[in-house]
Length: 373
View 1: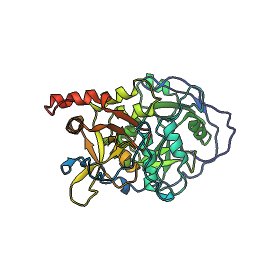
View 2 (view 1 turned 90 degrees about the vertical axis):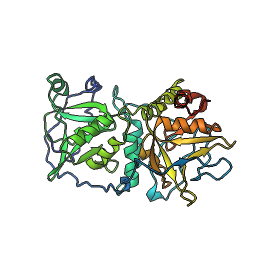
View 3 (view 1 turned 45 degrees about the vertical axis):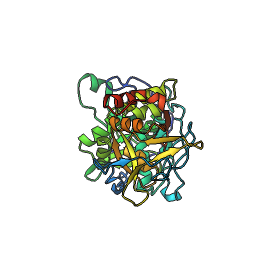
View 4 (view 1 turned 135 degrees about the vertical axis):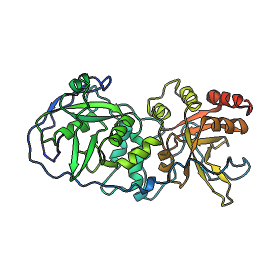
């Protein structure tokens, strides 16, 4: 394991592509020159903002009466591109994302960046709020992260050895390192004081989080050489995020990928199999809990669905995330035939899935005896 410190060096060293873990996407031995070390930065964040999220039970939920004011009120959206959440004070603003996923980039040729995470990190400055850090975490949940491995990762994998991941030590605590791009890996290598070879390996983000939770780590540092645009997630936070996530991140990954002709139909199929979340609130004070929905200017109603509780928090409306099984979605759609479809992850990237693409969900309603469309 290596101890990292700050040092200036030429930026000529690059990480070149190779293959990934079980099938390594990237692995590059990089020699680091000796250097004097400085103490690793002290890191800690509160997890208070994430506590209480994702209740496993709740009161009976009813959709707002179509002739009454929605509970809670939802801002009108355009059917092709839902509007962002209401503006918040600058110090509370969360890293949101465009409706469409950004174009794929490679800061090092042959090694794909996690663009959504990289762009969210750019919005983080010194003294970022818990809400902002959680906003970054939601973007880290899809796609891949790069991890650094001391020595030759390919050899360690072929020999069946555990990967010797690089860490930062802070007193008795140690933090695993992860990176949003190969360029961030390269920058970190330039801080390395240990002259041994270093490899970079791409792994699914949820797999990296699980390694942190299973190991003796105090947390995960993302893009450690990119201060102030870096974050530190304590293990307790990562454990909660993983527990409430779909292990395959099916819907989130579809929304984060470039749009294809069949993206909408694939999301519709996934919604018939995967648990989602809804945003609930007692908007009227009557005790009747309403599910947040959105409306188009021409009056079409769309149920808001979320791939993870953090997606609900990102909107900053004070709603409570509640798990929503495919059977519950089927019942709502079959019982409310005026509902035009769903809007998935309004904080972005987002997708409108209209009723005709939700046929796999409506089939569940027929099987449950809740009616047909």
